[in-house]
Length: 448
Image (tube, rainbow, N blue to C red; front, top):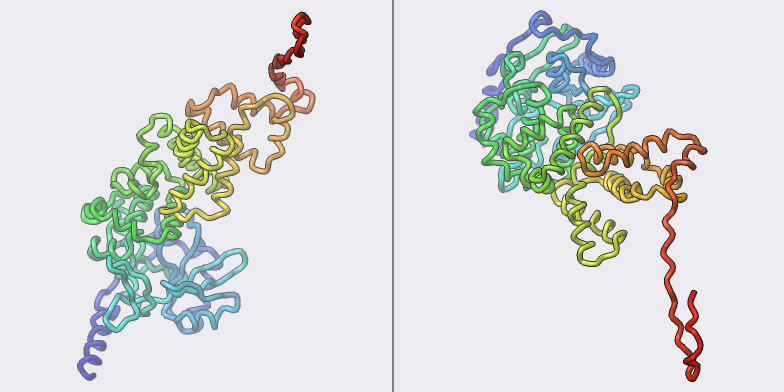
């Protein structure tokens, strides 16, 4: 018992902040002013500090501000436990199983507050699977331990808005300015703990224009199979961040370079071998990047509909070749492809519904006669479906004339629309041969 106690005490002192003294960087070194931090994040830090706790804005927000990028959200790290944080902020809630954190609501913002965490130990509550992936980790520690267990050096930055200083334990500011992405600790071990870090490396390098450090990059290709053990929901969330980062084109190219796209997006393994499909995907991702950078809304359903469109087309064609009704075959093909993709990425029902709506309207654009075009305009997903048609035309999949006609039809008034409609094709009348009555062979055969 005494030996165990001494071991634990020794571990605490060996990992105390002084054991890994950070660089204390003034605003002249990093350039981040407190007014550039959101008011909600500043208030959260101030309240915690006023109640006697250490608190810092941490991670991606600090990294992005140094890089001149406006953060999308803010995280705060503190030595207060989740229950203590919950006691300070009335509008807050404790969430999470793998990591227990607190969401503090301030106006329209939600600040994610986490307690400093320690590394794994034999006495801890850390739980891993047979591959080394961390399943549960709620062991609280000090700030030095918290910095050591973060993934990349550029994410282990602790900003104090009160005095505008940064605590930098792993030379993250220098790495950021030298355009290098470097893993904290042994890369192979860190990837086993959380294989998602391989995707994050690609996303962050593309977003920030960083070069992945050779030691950080080397194990990725050999360890890509570890992504098979990641829950589909987590994989979907990370892929969504990657694809909506504003740098999806660079990210996907980097995924292919590192061999991470195989099996992750099964459909892309096939699509990227097809010139027409590949052009369609790059156009889609480029269009998404432009919208993100311009601050325009982006639909995840639309994006995933473009990524797996050609796989659905192949499944649809195969079913029609086997004699299946075209409409039935279309809906069966949609279900088939989405089911295959769901084994890797847990696409939500709402997004899957959006995908199907966009796909189902595509054949209807071919019909420009009668009342059908007018009815198509009334569909809830018409605008997204038309944008999808425009991408198909730009990639050469359908004639540009078809896309132009629908653009003009959408902008036309009611009289102009009537004149644009094409005449309906009347079905050819069939000749009906009637059987001659017995004994009436001299009478001519009636016709219609």
